[in-house]
Image (cartoon, rainbow, N blue to C red):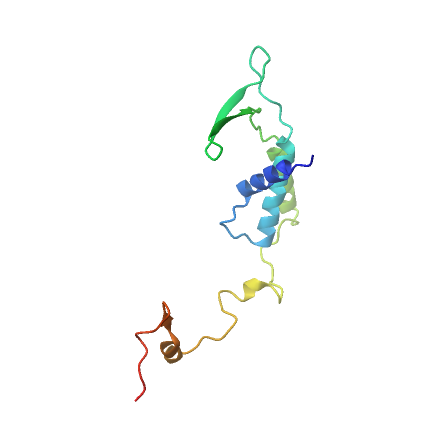
Length: 146
């Protein structure tokens, strides 16, 4: 039987590093994705915590949708052992002048060039007054021409 549980777990892990509510520039987004992948791969096979008698340590979790309790095993806490090595590599790259560029010119087809401009020209105020419709009725702003 095939399962997507690992993929869903990784997707949830990515959201810790790159929230959908925040817009990141492409280099920053790529760096966050790489950091999420490093962290996920470093800790995916963490050992489970055991009690003093050698049995696994469990916790209960109430699932509101299923209206029942589920068990999950506790894992060893994260140590972030890869961070000092990663920081040293970043510092070496920055000192050598090979780090991320400070500024990058936008390509001609980059959508950020357009900003918040709509793809059609804006109508005049007078045109909007004549065509404005609210809840299926002609606008109260509409004036009749003599």
